[in-house]
Image (cartoon, rainbow, N blue to C red; front, top):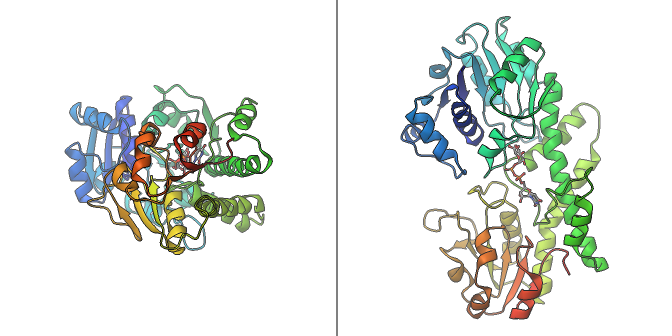
Length: 426
Ligand code: UGA
């Protein structure tokens, strides 16, 4: 059992802290947000993340998990310090590591000898070395250990990962970090720090490319009369490709893919390589938002100006309450520019407290569809699949439905009388 400090109680930090406590370590998690720490000590979780609340409650009650204000209060007895800090996209596309370096400067003279500082944030390649330079201590190690946590299933991803990547120059430090993860059954990929940092960008960029590829493929299916579901079934069973991340949608979004794609393009350019393939994927993703708008226009058969449209789903994917870089909001922005009146319902967006530009939020699907001239499903919430569409049709002014997540049964919807369009299905 080790003493672990986790700096940052965002979704990565909180998940890391709760899971490390769950597997037996003594964890102190710190954040500068006093209010958040107060809430967490009370067992209140600021984000919607499956199983997280249960693990935090467990950690608080068996005292293996504590929350404190400020990094300095967390690190004085630590064997390991995890940095789980935000690295937002800077104006030039580079990830901004300002808060990572700030915390490192704050704690570097205070951590006990032999402490291992572990960076989990997604950072430009070379940051591990920058942190080492900032610390300037021979008795402290710096290790890169990127996270691969999907929002919504972050706890499961932490406890049952496909792999654990550890990037270190010291093999002793690498082995100590591997030991920390001993209770977790996963292959350890022990590499140098630059490779570990690159693996994180490579993974997210490859996955985003896979999604854009399938979105493009769905467009081809529509044009040639093939069925995307049949095609992905055939494609995904090739073990070199794999069947996951082949679900067409309105484009990829969230707090990671858009930022990491831009960052890798920038990293490559800075290093003298023009990663045009990734530039094309970013462009294709933008076109996907436009494509959904064109589908809406085509299905309605007229200009969207002044039309009452319903958006079903606003979060960047289901099972999260996160609206950051949501494809649904990108589509909404474009629809609003065309003059459409937008009403939206999302099970995780509170219509009482949240306000969004150009969008009227309502509390349920019925209110959202009332007098609507067209609905667009933009997030794959199970509630939309289970909805009673044979009843809902009566609420709509014109029963037009763009299913931009392919969650409904195409034939049944057409039989019910909907003018229905989706992505690449026949
Ligand atoms: C992503 C990665 O999957 C995590 O491994 C990584 O740790 C995380 O970013 C991060 O860097 O922190 P997340 O942002 O939670 O996780 O989202 P994903 O589940 O990867 O989905 C990203 C986007 O792709 C969403 O908009 C989703 O709707 C879309 N998507 C995904 C599709 O349109 N089709 C698919 O088949 C899969």
